[in-house]
Image 1: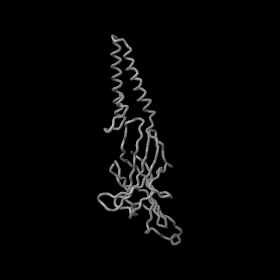
Image 2: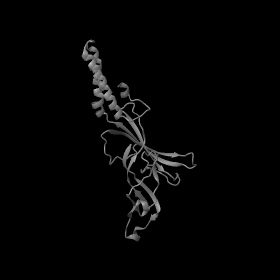
Image 3: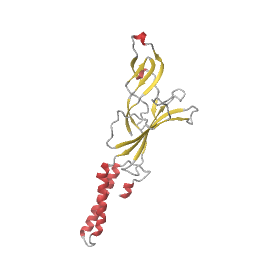
Image 4: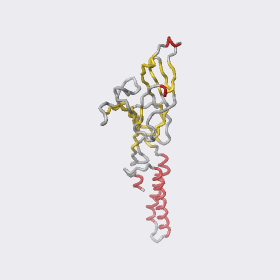
Length: 236
């Protein structure tokens, strides 16, 4: 899954505390992110090899030590695809973020909400969301996990964002399913023709070729998954 997002990050850095009265009333400054400390957040289930958040956008630093950095990012993450009911399938895709070197007592990952909780049923901000022409969002969930890995004794934190999406099937209904049904009806009508008719064999071969073409088209459309055979493929 490819996702275009703004990664909203806030943290406190005591080395950036100053008094605005001593600096002409300046309450905040903008600084390149490569000149300041920032948490080494990575996308654990990354699919393109670029695990770390890297961006040239600047961070905003306030006089009280609050640092805000909201870089725009494009992520490609792994998703477990279920195509059994294609094109009426529902998929669950996740983005799992965590620090690579800091454990929970050093970098305490929290959601940017007033009321802290480990689970949020509406964990994504869709204010700048552009609707997809192929997928419909059903649910957006965010969970904060605490996990101890076999290599270490400390607790590591991660924030997992789950997106449940449903495919919009209109295109596939009109261009794939309806023609397949029509061809199947014609296949049944072949038996109504007289057995000595030459057109019966011609029509049967034409229907067989048409079904083969639609099967090849289906192979091009669906993801190459070997775990399950889609019902539409079984039908063809």
